[in-house]
Each structure stands twice: as C-alpha cells, then as structure tokens.
Image 1: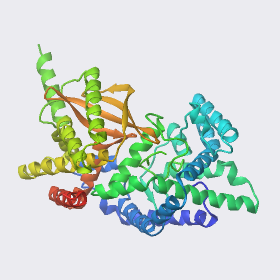
Image 2 (image 1 turned 90 degrees about the vertical axis):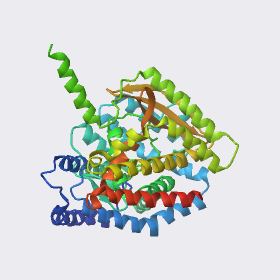
Image 3 (image 1 turned 180 degrees about the vertical axis):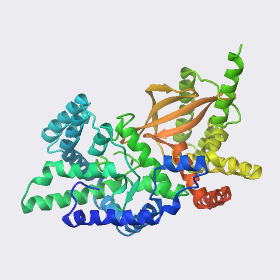
Image 4 (image 1 turned 135 degrees about the horizontal axis):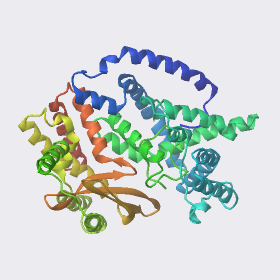
Length: 270
Length: 209
C-alpha cells in the first residue's frame, strides 16, 4: 500500500511467494475442461490461474479489513477535518512526484514529465511543502505513473493475477514495479532515526488515506456485488489497462497508492 | 455475383458473434452524442429536482434508465456463453431479474449524486457497432470524474449499451462477476438466478420497499 515496507515484510514476501507457488500447484483442479473451447478462452481471459489461492488471500484481507483497516480509516475520517485530510493527501501526492517524474521520463513522455516537474516545483514552494495543490489551480494537472506501468509500456506482460492482503489486487509485473518504486524513491535512502520515523509515518498515512478514500466505493461494491472478488479482479485489470495507455480521466497524483498495487476502483476524488 | 451471398454470410456471422436478437445498426456519432446530452440532462434534472423524497428521486431516475438503456441487449451480453446453456424459462427469468438489479443499482448510485452537473467530453470514439460518448460528471466540492457512455442503435432507437466509469466498464465487470457465480455454482445458471433473487430481496429491504 505504500512504498516503504518495514524490513520484516521484506523477508516475508519471498516466503509468501513460495507458499503461493505450492498452493498454485495444489490447486490446478480449478482449470476448465480442455474440451470446452469457450471455457478455456474465458479461463485465459480471466488470467487467474491461482484463483483458489488468491481467494484465500482475499478472505484474509477481508478479515483484516473488517477488524483493522476500515475502522482505522473511519477513525481517520472522524478525527481529522476534511481540510486537514486534503492537506495530508496533497503532501503525500507531492512526495510521490519524484518517482512519477522518473517514470514519465522512462516512458518517453516528455510533456507529462514537464508537468510533473512543474507541479513539484510549484507545490513545494507556493504550495508550502505540498500542503496546497497550487499547481492544479494553475491548470497544471497531476497524473499517476509507476514502474508497473513503465514495465508495461516497455512490453512486459502482466503475468498471472495476484491478490495480496493489505496491498490488494496486483500481478508479478506491478509487484516488481512496486519494489523498484521503493528502491528508487529518494526518501528510502535518507538515513537517520528521524527519517525512519518519517518513513513509517508516511507509510501508515498513505495506507489510511487510500483506505479512507475508498470507504464508499468498497462498501458499495461489497453490497451490490454477487462476487466482490471477481468484480475487483475485473475492475483492477481494466483500470490498469487504461492507466498504462494514459487514456481517459486520470486520478490526480494525490490519490490512490500511486503505485499500481492496491485499487481497482477509484474513490471519489476530493 | 458471389459477392452478395458472401456478404450475407459475413453479416450473419457478425450477428451470431454479437448474440443479440436484433443486429445493431451503425449509429451516427452526432446522434449518439445528442442522445446522451438529452438523457444526461433528464437524469440531472431528476436527481437535482428538489420535489419529493429520496424514493421519488430514485423512481424518476429509474424511469429514465428503463427507456434509455438496452436492458435486454446488455443482459444477454453479460450472460455471454451461459445464455445458450440456460433453458428458455431461465433466460426469461434472468432478463427479468437483471433489469430489476441493474435499474435498482444504477438509480441508487445516481440518486446519491445530489447537486450533480455533467458536461459532454470532447472525444467520441466509434467502433463497428457503437459510439463511445465521454462525459465529465461533477459534484459540488469534488473534482470531476470521467463517465463514458457506449451508445448503439437498437431497433432504430439510440440506446445505452454500456457505462464506463473511470475506465471500468459496467458490462465487462458484471460479465466477469456473473460468470464467476455460475462457474462456482457448478456451471449452472440456476446458481446465478438464486443469487440475484437474494440480492433483489436485500436491495428492496435496504430501500425500505
């Protein structure tokens, strides 16, 4: 959910993958009858060969969400006034701009890179360290970009769909992109205890901010859907496809995880 | 000439692919845009019109959606490959339930958009069968979000065949959802119908009637 995993999570990820691999092998029964061409075509299009494992992770996520994530997001919304939450969102978005800029450049999008650089300068100075989104008022609109998208632009395929508790919907490409995102974020490499605290707070706040922005969307999906897992999978993959080609109305730099992993649904922007 | 019969075969093939009762004719982009403009204005008026309760507002929105959405075409598209495995009774029941679910869900969603404004976007993309009209929906105090409408000519009337919110198509997402319910219910359409009946009961109780 945020670009700064604590060391323990770093160690947990390979273990998780190994476990996922084993379970995937054990779960090959989910494959369709090879004689049914339409079923096979649908299975391919859905791109979810380890669905039983992913559904298990989705259930784990549901539990965590009900017990911790959603209540925390609710509390965040209740205790902080909207102006403060908007300021926090703006600051988080501004902190993300260096990584967005790198990705704009890696994709050869010079105009978008210029907009990103301009936003960073305007918002850091006139926007008082990113508290105010002065750039948007000047007509310099934000966009997201991440390494998962860059890898896609470079021709890397997404790989099988993955659902990861807390992080949400993903795939090997976007997950690898997320890792690169952490590694290239300048804030990852600034040492000192004070920065450690900053990094952890930033991670936690990003998680809260993202979950808070999705309270209504996820509630609506949960209540109106016959299979929330399938809906989220489809929505995530459609949404990523649109983001990769930079088409349509995009979320501002300040919303979402800014990272590709996490949301298939866009929360109502503030 | 052998050209004509061949074209006939091709058209028949397209008709099968589209799996629709009536083959959708080509639609003029200007006509599609005009239709979305009128329908959008009607929806905005129904949502923002101060008269009546939330339930009244929903009922007005539902009435507009019922006549402007190609409910049957969308329903059949969404059921996709399972349509043929369903019995005639199941097909009929599915379409009835689908209309109920679609209209209730959409009108509940739109009903929340008090103070909404919409503007037509600049782009219109056209495919073989339909035209994509993009609009920007704005609510007080929040930046706009993109809502695209796929419009096709159905029975010489322009009709909405898909709604795409921020790049996510309602039609594709629901197809994935329904297919998953059927597959997990032993590849039986009956499993979906049961789930839909329960869903409608829940929606009715939540709306209070």
